[in-house]
Each structure stands twice: as C-alpha cells, then as structure tokens.
Image (cartoon, rainbow, N blue to C red):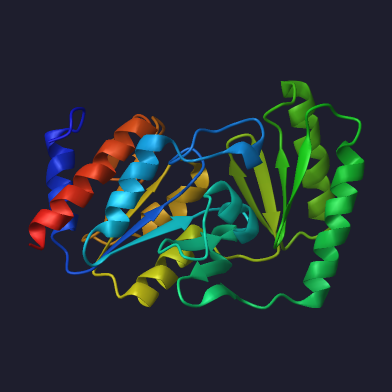
Length: 264
C-alpha cells in the first residue's frame, strides 16, 4: 500500500474499487492542481496526472473533472484534447464535454445572457479603482477574484459587487470559494453534475474529491456506496480527508491498482 494512506482509507478504497462500474469525479483547482495567482496558469501536478491516467486505463472506470470553471477554460487548464476519455462538467454542472459527443449544454436564455454581460461590465467598472481585482467572465455569470488584492481592497470589491448583484439580479446564485465569489444565473451545482454524470455512465459507485466550499454540495449528495474525499483541513461532509494533493494522488493511484486487481 502507498505510504501516508491510513488503514481506514485503504478499506474505503477497496470498497469502491470493487463496484461494478466506477465514476471518479474530481474537482480541479486545489484538488489536482495548486491554487495560483493567475487562474489560467493552473495545471495538474505530475503525481495527480499520473493517477488520473492510471484510472482512465482501469477497467469499467470513468474519470470526470467537475469544476466551477467555464468549460472552455477547464479544457485549457486540464490540457484536455478532443481524443481524451475524461468527461468534463464545467460551470458547476451547467455544461459538459462527453467523449464521442463533444459539448453538451443546456440552452441559455437571451435575456439572461444580456443581463450577464451588463453585470460583468458593471462589476468591472465598480471595482476598477481597486488593485489586484479580476472579474473573470464565466459562461453563466462571472467571478470576482481577490487573491492578488490587499484584504481591504478584497473586502471592498466583494461589498460593491454583492450590492450590485443584489440590486440588479437578486435571483442569481452566489457561491464562495478560495479568494473568489461567483455569481450565476444558472442554479446547477456540483451535486446536480454528479447526478447527471452518474446517470450518463451508469455508475454503481462514485468517488468524488474536492477541496472547496462549492464541493460540499456534491459531497453531501453521495450515497452510502460512494466515497467522498476532502483535500485540506476544514470541516467537511466527506468521509475521508487527506491533507494535500500529493496524498490524494496516492489515494487515486491506489484506487486504480485496487480496481485492476478486483476485476481480474
């Protein structure tokens, strides 16, 4: 067994590894890739990439990345090619990429898209005087990044944009993450993304791993036959917690090994 993996974790890994059809769904930022100041520079750590590749090669196993990133941006940072067998759920499950099908998305309303564009512009204007603030365009809304801002500027940016959205789009969904607040006119979450991926793949068990607050929706949605993994140290609904990406990579590598052994 891999070093650093507890006996409880090993037991949980063996249990999901023995399922008939396994879906391994993974958040990207903070789970497979380090959090970085420039979000578009994020890339999978080598150990995480090797673990993903091993799972893709395992029998009756489907791998998916489930992210709040727009699908287009997720494909860039994941270095995802048209020939990839990894499924993608972007925008918290409002848009998908499926092998053999390509992009699958639920149609957006022109009125919603118009409001999105107007609010993005208003957010950029409202925060333009603050250093280190980046308004990230997203397919169904936008995000306010404050990682590179001083705490006072970050607080002011969030206050200004919160007030803006509350005034112009109070029905939008608001999500918090690591140095980001996201606003969207779509209300899908990572829980609905897991449900859709489970249905598409016919999975009899799911392993979902994530590190952020937005991953808790998916973790809470898992069944007794599934396994939730949290990367980090905060309170979580996950049944298994690992301290960092390297340990998660070891868990995933062990899962791939157990998967091959259990189905031989």
